[in-house]
Length: 92
Image (cartoon, rainbow, N blue to C red; front, side):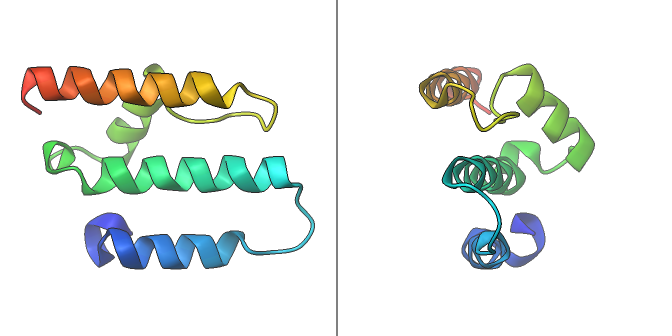
């Protein structure tokens, strides 16, 4: 969505999708985090030539996606900061 519609529209659509009953705050936060990472990576010009699968594999490899509501969110944030620093150093 971020590639085709832009980050802002993608955020509005994905947040509206997540605003449903029946999930815990922890599950909601996990979904919102993963959506944010997807938007960031999907709209990153450095990823323009990559498939969605390639981008998601890179996100998984770098520990950017939350796979359980109980996962340590500070670790995810630290992984994301480290990932962005590495990308910046590589000029990507």
